[in-house]
Image (tube, rainbow, N blue to C red; front, side):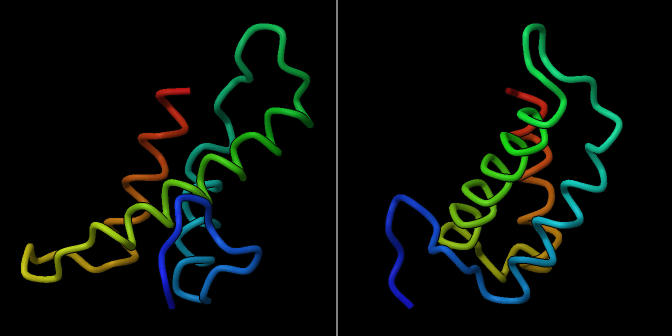
Length: 82
């Protein structure tokens, strides 16, 4: 698997799981002003996919955290920053 700036259409299962966990952790987050709730959900999905993909490329297993845990944290942070 080669890494590009944009995530592939279908992330590997372990990364998909990280995206789903990040979305569950940010489910109750209110949409930013002017965002329709359905648009905000789509935006969170896109943010999470990109953040998880980037986390995968920067993952360092010797840091003592699982890839999934690291990716979830990166995605949640990216969603909150938005």
